[in-house]
Every structure is written in structure tokens, then in C-alpha cells.
Image 1 (tube, each protein chain N blue to C red):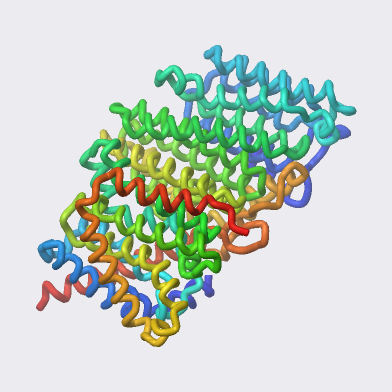
Image 2 (cartoon, rainbow over the protein chains, first blue to last red; image 1 turned 90 degrees about the horizontal axis):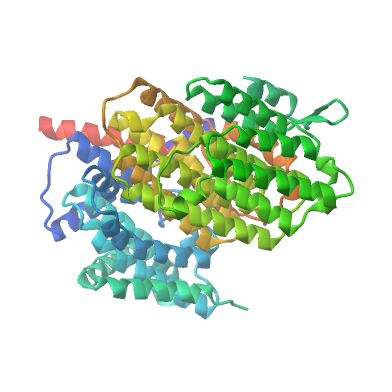
Length: 233
Length: 390
């Protein structure tokens, strides 16, 4: 038990400053402002919806965050980020067919990404593959992931939704950060600038794909999955 | 209680008496413990008592005839003909192994393993978890004891010998079809009772997939799912449940037993190197969680709250459960398992899935996540109070 308490004790910069705490709040408020979400008071239900996505952002393997021994994996992160839309879908009995349309492209993109990394661990998304085919799959997977985010987060119009969107987009940019870090020019940029810059690109990209048709989202995710299935020597 | 007591005896090696006629191992103890929990949830009838005794007899038998006879008796005492048919398939499968093998003792009958017997056992398992109801699109009832019998019958095959890849694939297909269909039916069902039936079928289907992994991780995942099924059956959430307790029993709350059970199946698939299966399992689990979330409501029952507390306590204690209850299960079936994946306790934090090269394939720090949620929640509450003050 002492190792857990020790890890939590050493994780205070992660919890209060980056990627959680102030920086997470800032990112969420900016995205909420962009989406026209009104700043609301924090009620008990908003808090219950807000906590899981905020925890995921806090535990993301982003540089230069303080090291933390207990990382998340893709299924757990997905579940916690989808929690606000999930709880709402359950309480309002939203048609499952509609839910499937929203979630399936994201799950297919996730499958393509974990097929390349061969681990469910989120930190695996920061390992840029050596083979060009795998690199292409990583890029396609990240793009499909980002394109799948807007329908999911359009379900509700509050801070929890904005928080989910930030979390999902941050996971989507992990492969992009990994790819960019291999370029000598980009390597000179401090990670504290690189992460928000890629997040801004992801927000713009998600906004651009907002009106994309459902078959196009499936096509993008399907292509990523198809490429991930090709054997590499 | 006998199951719990049995765990003290079998921590190092299976306990054998009467020259190997009775063998108590990790699988026997898990089945005894779970069957005891399941029988607690139904009104006591002699039929169920005899079923339980027959299942105990089958799972503690070191001889194939005892195993086949016990399984046949367990299912023959059921009221539904498809369960009796499943029993015939189990008995036929094991007797087929005995006839082809050089010995009728389970531990020495590896040379009798063949595809006909395997298919017979797999068909029996699919029938017992309700595949026929799924195919005929009818709800009917679900007998968790039959599902437990099916899983135990299939897992016992690892005591006989290793499976080939074709058998594993067939189990994935059967488990995947049952769980996906049941999850979709659960999420689209209109009545809470129907949802519960499909939900438990879906959980059993996922357990079939985990069995097909043929790894220590898969066996641990089956154990976790059986425990989750028993706790859910104990809580009877379809009769009415408080929202907090209902969500704890869905498996959508990190750290709860349901979450750890669903995660362990996905992790077992990933540790075996099948990423697509891992994500299909997780998609099915999400459907099952959503279905369980949709049935929350009704008049709040105390048993639901009790089961939710048990689920949270057991979920946080998974490192102990895995070390004490489920590791003997995988250790004693080791002869038939492949080394492609293991689920290990991660200190007190939760569980860690390792692949064949002992690299982390998936992580579930349930306790750390709950602590983190508590810390961030407290911080947000303090900030909101401060804002109100200003």
C-alpha cells in the first residue's frame, strides 16, 4: 500500500498542474467556449460526470508530466471518457442503434491502433513504429479516432462533454506526437508547446470532420484496421 | 464454505484421496464456492440440492466416468430439455475421451483427446449457456448453475490435455456469437427481467471466449466472470435497485468486480496477441454495461445494495482473489494451457496482464483510479465551495 501512497504523493504536479489540474481546466474551458457551452455551476451530477474524464486526462502519458507508475490502458480510458454520454444514454434510454453508430467508428479506430502497438497500454501509442506500413496505420488510426469523436460528444452540452472531448482528442494526438518527435526540427520544440499545438490541430480537425457522413467515418476507420492487418516483415 | 475451506488445502497442489478417485483442485473449489453462492439466490428445493451434489461429485472426480456421470446427473435434474441435451453432450464427450485413451483417469487420458469429443463438449457448453434461446430469439429463463456447469466441463478439459488452435478458434466463434447476440438483445430488451437474462447469457458467452484463450490469463478471467455472475445473481438488480448500487453492479465503475471481470477477458485476449478479439470483447462489455445501466430503477431492494458493496469490496480485493482463489485454478490446469498470457496482481493497486514475453499487455489499477477520482473530486468540491464564498 505504501508504494501506491508514495506514487500518489509524488504525482501532485500531475494532479494540480499538468496534464490534470490547471492545464486540464484551461483546455476544457477553451473547448467549452469554442463549442458554445455555457459555464455552469458545479452540481453533484455534473461532478459525477466530470470526474472520470478528468482523471483520464490527469493520467495520460504526456511529456513532460511527472512520472506515474500506474498507467491506464485503452479500454479503461475509453470507458471513463465515455462515462458522461454513457450515463445519459442509459438514463434517457437512447436507441442502441444510434449509440452503435456513434461508438463503432471509435472502437474500430482503437482496434487498429492497438493492433499496431500490440498492447492495450496507452503509453504504447507513444512508440512510433519503424515500418512504413505501421506508420501509415498509426496515422490513419489517429485520424479515424479524431474523426469519430464529434458525434459522441454532441450528445450533451455541458462541461463534462467538453472534458470527454479533450480527453479523447488528447489520446488521438498521442500517435501524432510520437510521429512528430522523430523529426529533428520538431524535436527542438518544448513538449509543453508541442502538446497544446497538436491539440489545437486535433480540435480543428475534429471540427472539420463534424459534418462527415457516417459511411466516411466507417471507411476511414476500416482502412486503418485493414492496414493494421497487413503482415510486416 | 466447503469451497473456501478447500482453498486452504490446495494452495500448493491438488488434494487427492482414495487413491485418486477424489481430487480437489482449484477448479473444484471455484465451482463449489460459486455454486454455493448461486444456490443461495434461489428457493431451496431438493432438485437443486441434488444438482449441487452431482456437480460437486463431477468436479471432485479423478475418474472420467465420475466426471461424465456427475455432469449428466446435474443437467438431467434440470427442467428444460436443452440442458438435458447439453448433459448428454458432456457425458458423450468425456466418455469418448475415456474410450480412446489408454487410461480412464482424467490426468492420464491426454491421448484420448479428439475433435469429436471436443465438438461434443463445446456444443454442450453452448447449449447450456443458452445458445439455442439466442438462435430461436426467445427470452425464457437462464439457469446460472447450468452456465457454471458448462464452463466447468470445458475448463476440466485442460486437466486432460492441451487444445489445438482449431479448437481455440471454434470456442472464440461460439463464445463471440453467444456474447455479441446476448449483449445486443440485452441492450434492446424492454423489460428489466429480460435484460437480466440476456445479460447473464452475455457474461457466460464472454467466459467461453476467455476459456478459448487457453492461457492462465484466460482461466483467471473465467474465474472473475463467474464471481461477477454470482454477485449479480445475489443482488437481483432486475427486482429494483438504487442508482449507486445499480451502477456498481454494471461493471462500468473502475475498481468494481464487474469492471475487473470484463477487463480481464479483454486483457487475456490482448495478452494472447489477439488485439481484434480484445476490442470486440470490450465492445460487448460496453453493451452489457449499458444494458445493465438501462435497467436501473424500481423499488430499491436491500439485497441489491448488499451485492453492490460486495462487488466493490471484491473488486478492490482482486489482487488477493487472484493470488488466493484463481492462481491455484490456473496452476492446476497448467498442463493443458499455453504460456501466452498471465494476469498478475499489481501490488494492491489492481491487476496487470502480461504477454508471452512478460511485457505489460494491459493494466487495471482499480484502487489507484478510485483514489484518483476521490482526490480530484475533493479538489473540485473545495474549488466550488471557494467560488461560492467569493
